Length: 370
Image (tube, rainbow, N blue to C red; front, side, top):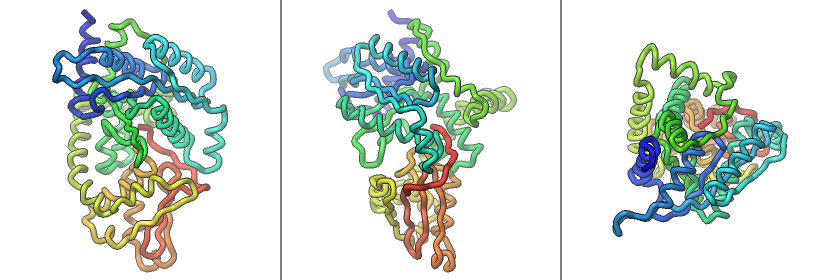
C-alpha cells in the first residue's frame, strides 16, 4: 500500500477535480512543469489517477495525462537549462511526451524594451501562448498548473497589501479559459492542497525537485510576502492566517459571482471581442450604460475588460482608473483621457466611448505574479 501522504494527496486532487468540475471524464490534460516541487507532484499525482480504473461501472473515467509542457524562458542561464533537464527526466519517468519551447536569451528582454510591459508580463504572455499551442498539439482541452492552497493564500495577501477589489481578493480561479474564446482551460488541481502536503507527498515517493532561487529573492514583493509577512502574521496575529485568507477568497468569489451576470449583460460580449484584438488593434465600449450601472456591477464589468487582455492581472487600482474615465467630466470627454493598465493594455476615453487595446508601443509596467 502507498504511504499515507501519497494516498492523501491523490484523494485530495480527485476531490478537487470532481467538486470544482475541473476536467470532464476521460479528458486529455497537459501538465505545465517547471521542474519544481509543485508541478512535479502534480504530474505524478495525475499520472497515478490516470492509471486507475474506475471502481464501479457508473464512476467517471479519470482524466488522461496527454503529456508535459515546459517553457524555457532564457532568463536564468544554467539554472533554466537544469530545469529543462529535470522536466525531460520527469517526462521519461512517466512515459509521456514533453512539449518544449525555448526562448532565445534576451528575446523577452527585447520585448520589454519595445514597451510590451514588464519582463514578468511579457514572459507570462509568451508562456501562456506556448501552453495553448502545446495543448493543441497534444489534443488536450486542459492545462494543469501546480498552484497550491498556500500559493492562493500568498496571492490574496499579496494583492491585499497592494490594494485589491473583489477580483483580487477572490484569488486565483480553480479553472479559467487560457484566453477568452479559447477551448483550452487552465486548471489548478492542487488548489486545495497545502505546500506541506506537497512536500510530504514527494518525500513519501522519494522524489526530488528543483528549487527556483527567485522564490527566495527578497527583491521581489511576493518573496517578501512569503518569507517575511506571512510568517509574521502567523506568529504574532493569527496562527491560522492561511485558512483565514482562503475564507476571504471564498467570500470574495461568492460576492463576485453575484455581480458577474449583470456585468456580462452590460458588456454584451465586448470582453470576448477585446481578447481577440491583436497588438496595435483596439475596440470600443459605449460609456452610457457603464455610467448608469450600479457601481459594483460597473466595476465588475471593467474588471472583465481588463481580464480579457491581461488574465489574472486585475487590480483595484486598474479598475479605479477605468472607472475614473467612465465618470469623466465634460472637459475630459472633449479632450480625452488615457490610463495604462496591466499587461501593456491602454484605455482611452474619446467622447462617449471607451477604447481599449494593446498598442505596439505601451509603457513598462510592474505587475503581480499569480
